[in-house]
Amino acid sequence: MSFPLVCLGNPLLDMQINVDKTYLDKYGLKENDAILVEPHQMPIFDECLSNPSLKLVAGGAAQNTARGAQYLLPKDSVVYFGSVGNDKYAEKLIEANRSVGLRTEYMVQSDHSTGKCAALINGNNRSLATDLGAANEFKPEHLLKPENWKLIEAAKFFYIGGFHLTVSPEAIKLLGEHAAKTNKVFALNFSAPFIPQFFKDPLDQVIPYTDYVICNESEADSYAKSHDLDTTDLKEIAKSIAKLTKVNTKRDRVVIFTQGLDPTLSVTYKIEKNEFEIKEYPVHPLETSKIVDTNGAGDAFAAGFMAGLVEGNDLDQSIDMGQWLAALSIQEVGPSYPFPKKSYK
Ligand code: 26A
Image 1 (cartoon, helix red, strand yellow):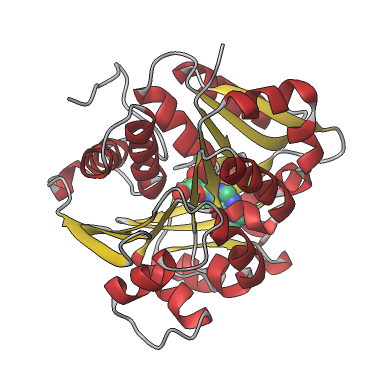
Image 2 (cartoon, protein in one colour):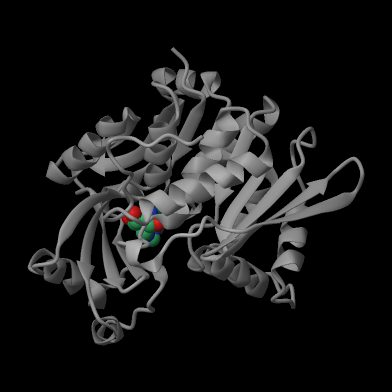
């Protein structure tokens, strides 16, 4: 049995509630952001638990992508690695993964509880505040266990949540080196503006392994600022990322920026010709009244996109699959996908 796609990230349970701007202001949170909680923000979780609008949903950015890709692909296509506690929250995550047939290979911590993310919904915005808990304890040794390394050797595609740069850059490098050495596809999502801002060094160490870089416009902007690019032009930012040093020169690097309702941008740096290919893709129109919440929209895009690559589709079609799945996911509560299953055609 071989699973073509391996994903790595921080498994979290999302505690999703509706809030207003005053609530976000009270904790110094932006309307659309993702952060690691500081001690003064810890009361948010108890406040979530006692909020009547509370919905507990499986989260963790790369795990959402893994679930979404398996949702679209044939049985036994995706494996997800991350670290959880031995508790009810982990059971809930395993259950959600099982519902789409995602293979879950968690490292289980006996002395930490499963990570949680307060997903604070304010209209079409979402502010994410995370307490990583057990997710923060992931170690590369888990990947090196013979039964897990076998899965990695059998895989052909890797998808890494940039959020994991806060946990184990070593684990990411291990997969990156393997992918480069064996000419397999390695994709990285920047995940949040704080990653290029505060985890610049580990990010810079991992980018050389990437064949695909996926992020949204505010993460691209944060990258430009932290790397002194001196531009806010998204095409220019994408070009400089696309042209960065690359370990595996058998594949061109493709940089993909989503921009909410604005067109998705792709910039490919063609190594042999030393030129860029720039494309734009309008998003799938969706009436605003159909939007339930935007938590997980970017993860769903990445899921559809990765599923497209695994199926052997070209860039245009894979991006279209990403946009299609993102539009489905924002019509569900949290980072979820509709049942009965819809299939992309
Ligand atoms: C390290 N941090 C902050 C995080 C996250 C995260 N996933 C991994 N690491 N902060 C928020 N998320 C997840 O992002 C999804 C939406 O894109 C949330 O759990 C949510 O499901």
